[in-house]
Image (cartoon, rainbow, N blue to C red):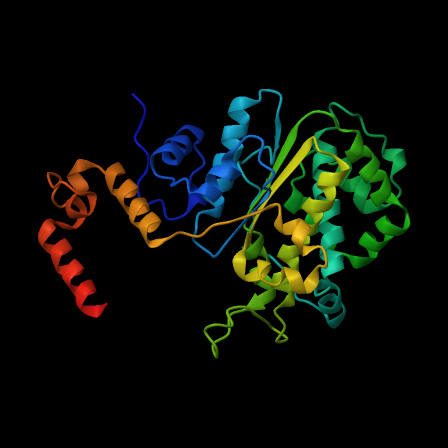
Length: 328
């Protein structure tokens, strides 16, 4: 007998068992029209946008498992976990680094290179690489590594040295990389998560204004924003290079709100976006789904009719309802 879904999953990063995650997806995940569209096999949606805690990670993991179920030939990245995720380990920034890191174009280019590099390296068993095609040391090191290289692995290495990244550009290695990327004909799906958390290392929370949640140490929040928007532009551009490769990512709504300011093609990128938001009725249904997944012994009044009454008891539920009526 299959295990019941886990109730009240606070952090989907801890949910990596495929069977259990599927149970949770079917038993707890509320399929709003936007979510249902994203989970469709032939969807054109690639980017999940939402505030923190809205279920972006859970949705990306569910998408990967569903795709793997219907396609035996699908290669998924990263290889060792459901989504590519990392913690912030950002270095201290010089003034030159700050100027480079606040540049939206820089992040579009470096994300594009990181994504292509990860895919091309993982596909080398189908499409062998010739190391002599690449002149820069950083590209050769990453492509010839004996270990899998995830998009985050590649990104961190590429941004570590501006000199090395510029050398890769000047030597036309990025053009060569794109040629390899274009040749791939087997299906590949890439899943990148926690981008916002990685870039939090470049910013500090403001203690002055609670609404200005992300302020750079030099009073500049652009790194946190453009670092996330860059992958959106990269996904849009790479979609036109090779339709066999599907790249899925999640970013924060607070960053996405600035897309129109940074990108003149914001409309095209927005067509790939699914934004998560829930009505009061949908939030109520999410609560009901979680309560229904709870063990009977954990419920206050397991014999009550409604889920919320089983969770809180009828008397407490009545008091809460009355309080809401008085305050409305």
